Image (cartoon, rainbow, N blue to C red):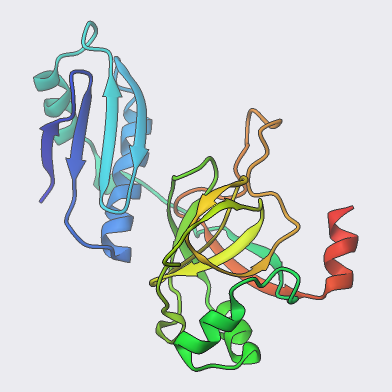
Length: 223
């Protein structure tokens, strides 16, 4: 059952549950699609997380109570969502890029070959974007690759660095501080600030699959 509550003076938080699951993710995506189709006057922006949606609205055009009333009557059951798009992302696991591969191998008791195979096998679900522009949070990492964050985060991660932390894996979209264990790097940009229409490589609801490339392939693709 959805829960509605004020989120500051001009926002509303819709909570669908308190866990990370594909079921709740689908509820969030259906709700967002229905909200988009409804085109409620006064709604400015919407932000989705694992199990919540934040709705920013203009209180001069619609009140909190009016907005809740309209949200409660969204025709979510009539929403049609197509098959998810699968985005394949190349990753070079060469020693030049896999800064923390030894630590991951130590924590998981796996060889590098096993780490790469387990990392490239799943088709991951994009739950949400956040942290930095275009940084995507994925679900579906093999439990055998579970490892802790770095005790001392780096002050600068390179754009394209691919890391693991806990039960998550992802790509650093811009140069930034970070504490994930880095196992490789992609030559593909996941955030293109020059593209104002579609700056992000993926969006929530898409799927991602990583595939291994060599050092030579990385250099060719980076040109």
